Image (cartoon, rainbow, N blue to C red; front, side, top):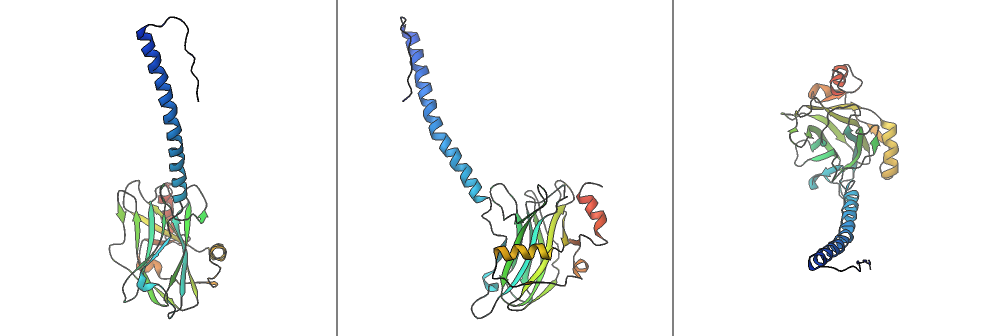
Length: 248
């Protein structure tokens, strides 16, 4: 219990009331501090526990493997390009069965209150989420992209098709897709694509040991079907990288 010392000098009614008010104020403040501090600590712990709680993939029920279908894996990284000045809160690849229903997504989501795992990090915001997507074997396609900047969202106006032929018992590596945006508030964002098979294979072995060895997917015609995915080391990338990094 806190103790309080009072003066032994004669006390008038007014000064006695003031002393009582000050004493009660100190007691109330102490009680409030005792109540608020645990609440602040609890809120901080909840925030930290939720930071990495979001999945990097979402798959429609109709596309999920079952005991009869076998399983094929689609693997890669989605994230933010390390040198990008302007970024999105969420960047996403969209995949669907060719001629079928449903869709799946692979994403990096980056907010204070919720994040997908930061499996790859090169700089403060140069981060990437590994995705390992189990699917029924069959014919699929990457058909669109999605960028969410909070105040604006962007995607391809027309669906495109990057075909994927998936066989049971195999794991297909799509590569590393890193996003950047061309202005502080506009909707124009793109992916730079690169290959880091060895790095990402090591990540998969550590997190998903049941996944078979990765094999590359042929994405040679990717730039022909959409202007929103550009090879990071390709001939079209130099000007784009200069714009994304603020050098132009």
